[in-house]
Each structure stands twice: as C-alpha cells, then as structure tokens.
Length: 195
Image (cartoon, rainbow, N blue to C red; front, side, top):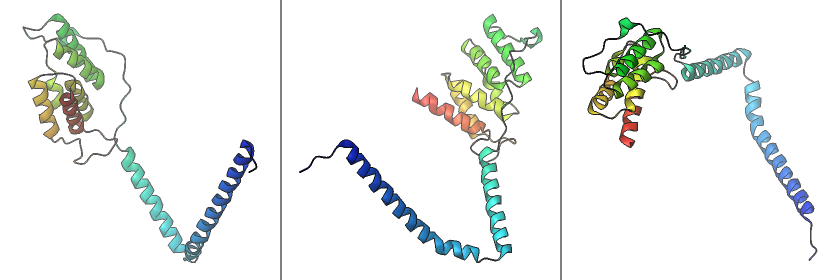
C-alpha cells in the first residue's frame, strides 16, 4: 500500500470539505429560490408594509434591551460638612465620619460611594437601613448590595422587606438593563445564603 504524505492528506481533506460546502450552499440556494420568487411577486405596497413592520419590531426589541437609565459619573468624594454629622451616643468617631461621608455622597448622587460609606459605618455601629427607603432606585439598589455584605438580623430583614416592596419609579416587570431594587435585594439575599 503506497504511503501518502501529510501534505497530500491535508490537501485531500481541504478539497473534500470545500466540495461538500459548495454542495450544501447550492442546496440551500435551491431551497430558498421558491420563497424568494414568491416575495418578489408581492405588490410593492406589501413589501413596504412588511419591511416597516420588521423595522418596528427590531426597534421595539432593541428599545427593550437598552431601556433604563445610565448611571451618572461618580465624582470625587465631596467635602463633608460638619452639619451632616449626627452621631448617636454609642457611635465611634470613625462611624460618624463614614456616615457623614455617605450622607454627602448620597445628596450629590454618588449612590455607590454612599452605600459603601454607609456599609463601613454599619460595620462600625451605624445604620445603612435608611437608604433602602430612598426615593431613587439606584440608591436602594446600592444599599441592597452593601447590605448583602453584612451579616445580621437587621440587614437580612431589611433586604427581605426591600425584595417585597413596590416603588413608583420601578416597573412591575423591569427589563434586563433597567434598575430594580427588588432584584438587587433578592441577589443580596442569595449572596448571604451562600455565605
């Protein structure tokens, strides 16, 4: 039996694969030919209506996929005013500073940074729970994320309440990219359950 070289085998395999691909392409074209001829036979007005419908559906699906608000850029940490510091008697000075920084960041719209500051204050003895009742969905979502890192009955009960709550600024069935503090609370509860 004659031996063949690797390059001969490779050439044979490439030829065989390209021949099969050409045959499949020809069969697909032959299968599509009747459908294309039927579409070409449609009146011009029908073609325009079908094209407009397809374009409207594509726009609708694209709009659903990208709906929601884009997060605002996170500014540098704002200066903390002493009027924002309202420490409870048992709090440490560091917890009061973290809480004040979170308050200032929340008022400037930096919800992620505010939630992190509140979480730091909560670890030191302050409360993060008030942010779960904020007016904006982004603030509630960031609070849920921060509470998910904490262990404790208060954090868990606040997350459960947030997961069941309904808010005016959130739709009942939010899209993929839209804000949902309920979804954030559910994810935080799952994170706590996993440990």
